[in-house]
Image 1: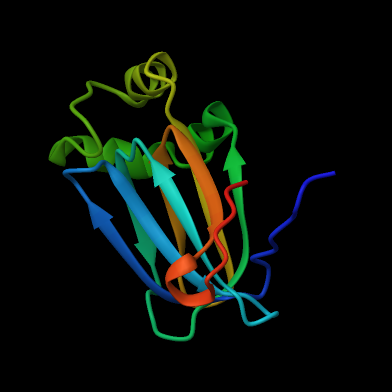
Image 2: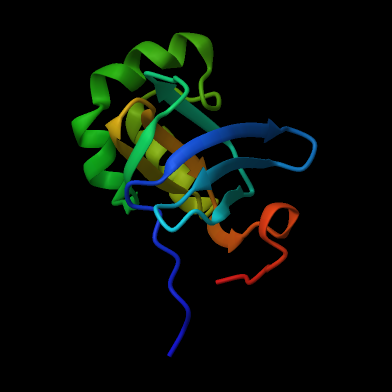
Length: 138
């Protein structure tokens, strides 16, 4: 039986992006006062809204790419003018390219504050040994 780390109702205490290491990191204080780090590995891009101190997470889940693009088609039609998150001619092409390259879409929902999504190939959650002295990858 594995160890479970719950981020539900956790407070986001910071986030950072490293374009050199291709990762986005969220640091979260859980309801049990642990500091955990959520790392989006092989990071491509993110779109966050309502960024503020004290943001309280509801959930992070992997969305089905097809459903995500159906629900957000208009937004991505506008984004293609800026070649975001990559160069593409239409949203079908973007979806196919992301699937071909094994990207996933992680949707972040909140009870308060930060919401959005991240395109990355993997997500890992671990206790942050910088703060707790206990580091376990899941």
